[in-house]
Length: 220
Image 1 (tube, one colour):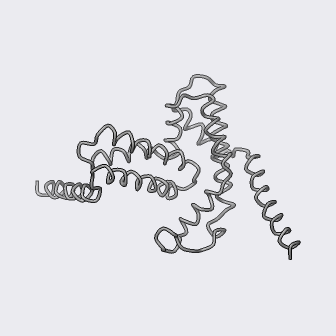
Image 2 (image 1 turned 120 degrees about the horizontal axis):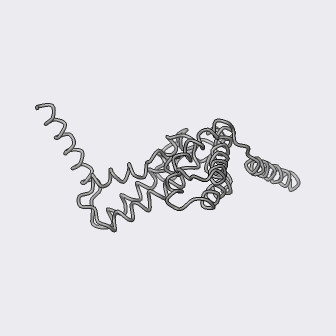
Image 3 (image 1 turned 135 degrees about the vertical axis):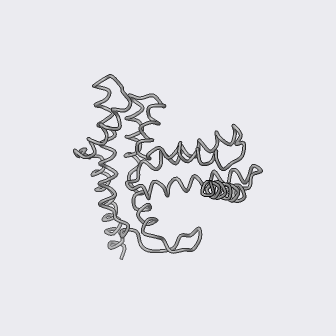
């Protein structure tokens, strides 16, 4: 029995090690290289060596997350319930769980590689490419919904959205990226509630205002 358990542990260990080693020897595909070149060209670095290094970093990361995603479908995560609400895990939840098990070195290599050649502002622009500008788009939404948003509220929500952005770059689909942002949006709304705001009321007031404006335009 003990020998059998040891064999199981060793087998699992070798499987994890195999996935880790595979992740460390990623070769960028042409598709990912093309996407990386398009993204990095917008930075206008005016330094071919620097640009080529950053392109390789981004392309390698894009290929790594694609390979991991494709080799770890949602079905590798057992069906079950979300312990937070008791509801069954959706396919999206299970895929996020599977992808979140990707070796942390893949993310670390991306961030350290970018920061070797880019300023923090340029790094942020690259991460925006991964997430199609969701930080600015989401912040604009909060500023429209929250009346007279204070500097402290803006800074806290901006920080949370930037955390969402950095975590989201390790996921392949936009549905996954949006789900990661939802985690941090919930935290932002809890922050507002804990600091004298009523998120639900503000949101209801905003939607009523938008509906009223649309109705007024139709009557013109």
